[in-house]
Length: 181
Image 1: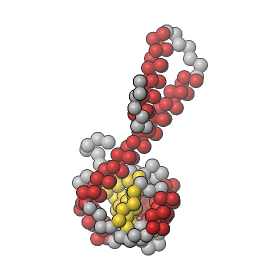
Image 2: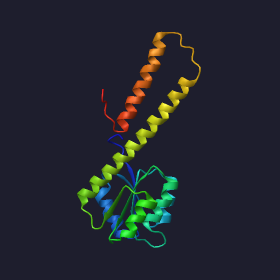
Image 3: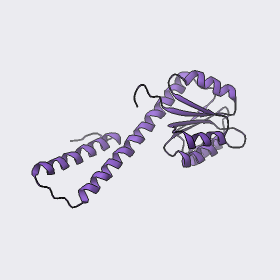
Image 4: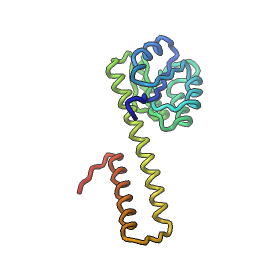
């Protein structure tokens, strides 16, 4: 993502003071959206592209885990983080199993560590998005190759081969594979 563009992050907490504090800490580095309930967060997800969702676990009407589970339907590619002031092992297990979370944090958090975590989550979002783009390009390329071609020259055949190799190399890079040859 270009340096001038900020990753959109959704912060969800039923305590306005927490959202105010997070906004003050993060506003320079991210495009922040805030919600004070799960329902409000889902409404934002329907209207706005979001790369990272960070939600409190304990909220009235809808827990953070429930929100993240439902958010997968609205915004499946978003990286999901849950935080809480309570050490609740069942909530952690539920978050992993139901919300497919990236990380689980406890309050209070260290501001530098929180910023670093959100940058890592944004990087993870970018890696996933790049993989999807590359897989789409590769599928398109494979479909073109399966279409009967009338290659009129060795140069055209070589160009197709080079395109395929370049796509595979980019996909290997995106998947974290190293060139072993």
